[in-house]
Length: 441
Ligand code: ADP
Ligand code: MG
Image 1 (cartoon, rainbow, N blue to C red):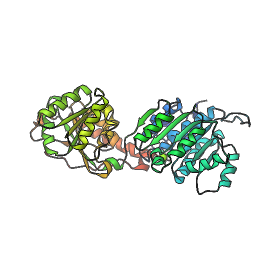
Image 2 (image 1 turned 90 degrees about the horizontal axis):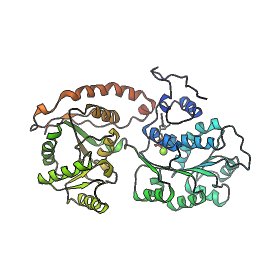
Image 3 (image 1 turned 180 degrees about the horizontal axis):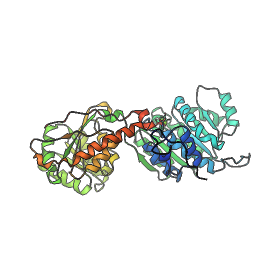
Image 4 (image 1 turned 135 degrees about the horizontal axis):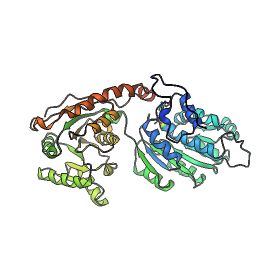
């Protein structure tokens, strides 16, 4: 049965919840989304929901406020509904399947429970929220009513497990929410213990704001070839980055880079689109008289480590990287990020510039776009919801800049208006960039 949503959003352009179509969400949940007025999936929801519905293990890296809860709540309820929910009365002998969500704090567990309820309700699926500081007795009563989603902080769940108030042998899906915080709070042993009660044959999703070695270790130990979904850091990380854009022909890029490097005494992280070009750029930079190292998939692990160590210690001024290799670069004190080539995926722009201005420091990002890349620039401006100020260099002949980019810049403005009318965008009010004045160098 395909229910077409009947409500229209205020602009009257699209049916409500239409943007959630095509993610594989069942009509009953689409109805819920319409009712709770979610019209557009957040980026992490758009990526995670279809992958999760297909049964993948997922590592999701995203900042708070990006809508992670529904990214796992929707697939979990849908999966549980398939395994004996949806109006089918659950007899005591029947294996119905359970979902387990672990969260670091009570507040977070409560919020997750609240988000779950409306989604689970149409399927008759009940939740139990097991958190410290609340009545054991009441939680025990709730557990007797066969909840099929258990949302818990690790310590309290272990209390219930040890008292045999709850069994986890029917769990078919596990979510570790804010896994980085759980580790920071010292919950690793508890999480390990809980997972030892859960069947190995299950789906696992892990969410974290950062990807650390410890998080990787959990993923490796407890997950099956997880798909990793990394979202652009929103808000704070990029708020302190100033940005500018040069329109420059391919053959003039090196000359411009030479001028720019002279301006920035500190560490420079430079992104190249291809690994082949990364090597060439690094060589050219050395010819300019600066130290440079490369980091891309053609380099061995030890070469990459040497490059990164050398960059961190100041042995290399410039680190030339491709997007694929950039994930592990967590270096504090990068003064400048240069997008020598614009990223193929606009979202990577935010990942790249997020490498500067770490830990609240100020950073600067300079991008080179060729005159034919107005479309790519527009895509980036959509994501960052601002237009990039265009700069010129006095020694780079102005005729090398073309106004071809201008229509893209103005075209970005009506989009911004639409974006802000979307409920989640306006609610969050995120990713505001400080706009630097156009810089003359
Ligand atoms: P996170 O777990 O990433 O910090 P949450 O899942 O708590 O983020 O979501 C943040 C807020 O955004 C919540 O108030 C939630 O209800 C709201 N929200 C999430 N997804 C959407 C959406 N698609 N449309 C509108 N609001 C949303
Ligand atoms: Mg959350």
